[in-house]
Each structure stands twice: as structure tokens, then as C-alpha cells.
Image (cartoon, rainbow, N blue to C red):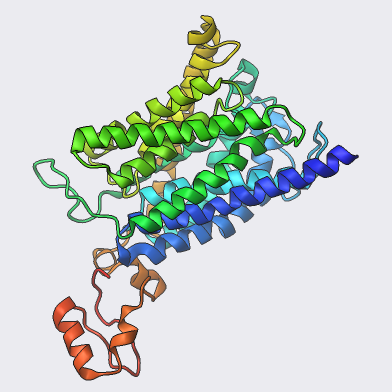
Length: 438
């Protein structure tokens, strides 16, 4: 009974930390996009926490953890996830809450990749479909004890494949279908760089995500007395640190500057990659996994650009490619079955199969969602909405209301319009009449 109480506190706290990572996604994306779209990415995170959470509670949890049918899908618990029977010292509702945090994270991965040009209504539809079907279905294969990949011995402790790879490749498919932001690519294949609006804000988001990742990984033990807690935590730290360090040094060598956005994504890629094997690899292996993923994220970003896929925050490189590498890394570095640690081949083959399956499922799911949105609410923002900025187009408010201080004195208003090109309404209404980059 005492262990149940302790586990309840641990898992509820871990769930809260995982859900707090949504604040990290919000700040990270708001800092990486242009100012005129910062409110929109924040609103999309609220969609994840509202529409996504409810969709998962009503349908997604049952698809994922309900009674198995053919190793593919759950068939009960719809609308009553708390009725699941657990063979551990933990109330079912605590488990449901923790899993809800994972589901919400899976949709937030997509948010950044489609930023600055996606119809807001389409994102609402996407959040519901991801959390009801796309994420839970592949999650069933991996984490339901009767799922077909689980029965093969596939290892994905906290979700490099189940969450990050599925989300990352869904994001790739949707971003490709959506098309790039206006002016992003030139006819000769060169790329126009849209500078992030606020790197300190993005950094704060990354710090919050890193903090939450300890609960993301260690919380997956679902057991406060587990001897794996500390090793999981140190592996998480080492992989994130080595991923960031590798990206930092590579950008200094390759580009001549210590690139902050690449360093941030190097950290995140290291964290994504260690998520699958955090309970199964040594500390030195965690450093190697983080280092490789920190290098990989830079070349994956260049590859995404080469494919003319516009990903404003690097979500595909971080979560998609980082997730696939982390999945394969378990087969290489697992302490008991890894190819490089023990010479065993069977696990790496299972991990390779699982990686291919989740990659294909993510691409299929993303394409399906794009087509559904296109046929119903419309998928892409109009050219005028994109030019004006999605903050004003969909939410009626800018991220930074710099106009307020200029509307009292006519001379100040005149100077503001002259220097910025932004037309401002009379002080009585204080509204932006024509859009511009804010």
C-alpha cells in the first residue's frame, strides 16, 4: 500500500512535468518563427492540450491500451480509460494521465514543422486525428503487451519510435504536402533563411523541454522504487549534453560560427535519440548516441532543405531522424543484446523492422491528415493570411503590441508609420488595419 502511494505521487509529478513540456514547445516555436506568427504557434499548443488531450482520453487510450485484436488495435476502454487493469502498484488514473502527456507531445512535434502557413482549423482536425488514431495505433503495436512489435521483442522504453519518429515523419509528410512558406526556396534550389524572431525565447523553451525530459524518460518506469531511475536520468543528461556539444563544435567548424539554433536542436536530438534505450544502455553508450545524433541533426536539416521541405523549427530532423537513429541505437548498444556490445544480431534486426514500420506509418498518417484537411476545412492559409501573419489573421492580436505606445501622439504615430510601413488605425480603435511582419 505504501508503495502504491509513493508511485502515485511519482507518476502524477512526472505527468505534470511531461505536460509542462508543452510550455517548452510553445516558447521554442515562438522563438524560432517570425514574430507575426508567434501567437499562432502558442495557440496550436493550446489546441494540443485541449483538443488533443480530450481526443486521447475518449478514443486514443482505448486504441492504444485496450484489449488487443490481432496485435494491431485496442477494442475496449473507449470513454473509460480508468478501467484498465494494471499489474503494478499504481492507480489506473495516474497511468492514464501520464500517457496523456505523451499523446499531447506527439502532436506538438508536428506544430513547428507546419508553422507560419497552415490553416488553424486544419490544425484542430490534425490534433484530434493524431491523438485518436495515428499515435495510438502504432503505440499499440509497440507498447501494448499484445502488440505485434512488442511480441517480437522491439524495445522503445520511452518513445523514440512510438512518439518522436511517428510525429517527425507525420510532420515531414504534412510539411511537404503543405508546401514551403512564400519565398523560402528559389528557382535555382537555393534557400532563403528566415531568421528566428527570438533566440533567448527559443532557448528558454529548450531548457524547459530538457527539464521535462527527465520525467519523460524516468517517469516511464512507473515505479518510484525502480533501480533504473538514476541510470535513466544520467543517460538522459549525458545524451542531451553530448548532442548539444557535437552540434556546437560542428557548426563552428562547418559554418565558422557557434550557431544557437543548431546547438538547441543538437541538444533536443540527443534527448530524442536516448529516449528509446535510456534504460538499456551504459553511460558511455549514451554519450555516443547523443554525439552521433547531434551531428546527424545538422545534416538531416540540410537534407530536408535539399528536398525543398520547409520546416521552420527543424522538427523533422530532430524528432524524425533523431527518433529513427535512437531506435536503431538500442539494437547497437543494448547491454545484453546489442550488436556492438554483445555481437548479437537479432535485436538490431527487430529494431530495424520497427524503425521502417513507424517511419512508413508516420508518412502515411501525415499524408492522410493532409488530404482530410484539404477536403474539409482547407489545409493551407491563404496567401493574404500568410503575408499578414497568422497572428492577426486567425487570432486578431499581435505577439508584441508595439502600437500601444505610439497611438497617443499624432507625431509619434506618423513617425512609426513612416519608419515601419505599418498602417495604424486611429487611437480610438487601436487596431492594425493592414498586415505586416511584426
